[in-house]
Amino acid sequence: MTVKTTDFIIVGGGVHGCATAYELAKAGYKVTLFESRYLSSGGSGRSAAGLRQHFGTEVNLHMAKYNLKVFPTLEEELDTGMDLEFRQWGYMWVAYTDSCLDQLKKNVALQKSMDIPSVIFTPDEIHERWPYLRLDGIIGAAFCGEDGHINPQTLTMAYGEAAARYGAVVKTYTPVQKLLAENGKIKGVVTESGEEWHAPRVLLAAGPHTRPLAATVGVDIPVYPERHNILISEPVEVFNCPMVLCLDDGAYFKQCPNGTFMFGRDDQDEPRDLGNEGNSVKFLAGVTASVLKRIPALSGVRVVRQWSGPYDVTEDHNAIIDWTPLEGLMVNCGWSGHGLQFGPSGGRVCKEMLVGEQAFVDLHRFRLARFAEGDLFFEPAFI
Amino acid sequence: MSEKVNIICRCEEIQIEEIRHWINKGYTNLEELKRILRITMGPCQGRGCRDIILREISMATGKPISELNTGVIRPPVKPIKFSLLAEDN
Image (cartoon, rainbow over all chains, first blue to last red; front, top):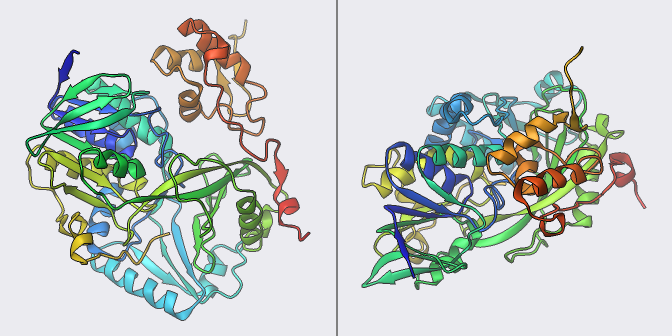
């Protein structure tokens, strides 16, 4: 069998894998990316496309600020002809209980200390600014007007396309069957089609698939899949409705740049296994009832499509960005539902770590060993 | 004479040239074109455009349509009003 060699192998054509391939290729490194289907086919392309600076931990806020610095000019930088649809219509977390509002206030205080322009709104202020919202029973909300939306599919595919332009080898429809290790070090990958590729550094950025892939070389990555559902409406007149996340039942909605409305909602009964991208009737009816009472103006609008996708969840709802115990094998996964927007910062830190540079943020809290050590790092602002 | 415009996806107003442009760049799977151009995801859910686009992919790749990925049909298949779904049974 012919063995091909490269400097870096990335497994996973989601936004983190593609952004890392882009950063490496742009810096002149030889990199090959493997994706089992097409770019953005997993969690990245199925996400709710939100960008926010509402987090409750410093490291996530540092990275979120960096993402928001990159997004306004990213379409121009990647220069692929794909429309990234970046918009800043704001993002609101709506509290229905005192304990929720207290946590939002703590998060906003931390955000303000880092020069993020978040505010706490009273119910009256919300009604005045968005008279079409009917948020009965709320006691307040956190809002950041810089936050917004990006097209998750073109973002991922544009990173991949730009990476290829800089010389990255992007192999779509090429599932990796297993990793290869030798003498305690990573050696490469074998694809299901029988290709063998060697590299001294391998990055797994395969969302919930990271766990079974890492297991092929005896490394355990505690991340598991959890299916989430979204629906989209027909387009209506654009009125810049921000992302509204309701913390009573986890329902959220927002207008997208093309005028459509996106609804989503959590459901604890959703399947937790790989490869389940089916549809939930329960979701369709439940989310519609929940959202319509908060924005009744949409009652005559039609739902066009629903879909689902996997979160890659960790016990503390924070990512794992770290070298594994197997020398040369790194992981970036476990974003637990907020990973899409971290493509720019995730791509940058992974490139920095892979080539031996100092990462631009301190990633100690994202280390893999925290699970074994019982030193979990909970993100208070997750959906 | 006015310029000839051949719109294939009426929901998103995508012309045949745009579809051919991305097929020529190597995006020869309907799922990829869908994500770049929004084709088959509008109110018609591909009823108007899917067959034409598959024919374009087939011509460009030499593969018969029966071997191509035809995309995923998602509920509710035909658009329905939110108010219908939210009604109490």
